[in-house]
Image 1 (tube, one colour):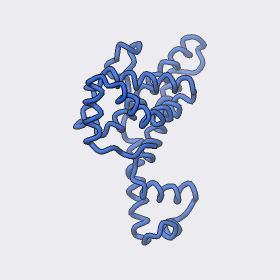
Image 2 (tube, helix red, strand yellow):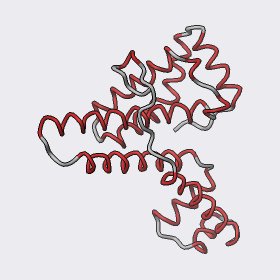
Image 3 (cartoon, helix red, strand yellow):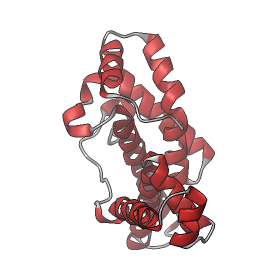
Image 4 (cartoon, one colour):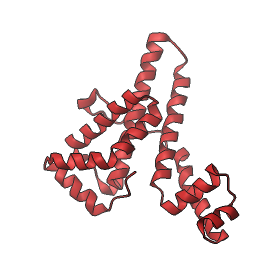
Length: 197
């Protein structure tokens, strides 16, 4: 996973894309393709669909570099991750609507709950991978390896107070995955069948 990029890199990359530099798109793809694909796969649980979302996201970025506004979107990485989540959720809704129409399996409410769970899970994954390494490591020790805060402190070589602080802050960040609304379908991008990019 790529490290957070400095704002200067983001601005230069946006300028290069706006000039139509194919090498810039290649560099952006190399840096963020796994983020986009993993996010899409987490939501859609389908390799082919995740590949399609990855192509759509990078196609959109290539054709619309001015859509990125660092004041509103944060880092370029965060913007691309949001595009990936939004497009994956759109594709999941689209496939659910199609399945309901063709087979009548389940209700629209059940499908919407599935969409919401997938979107929250993808957002939580992104939050964990984007948080600073000391917070992420503390959460991994506490929750995946079942260590208490004392054991976490010992494993990290920090005080117990510092371990508690890291765990608390990491959990606060992670809790935002549930508090933000699921990204719906903002005005479509016509080049991709009206998708919400």
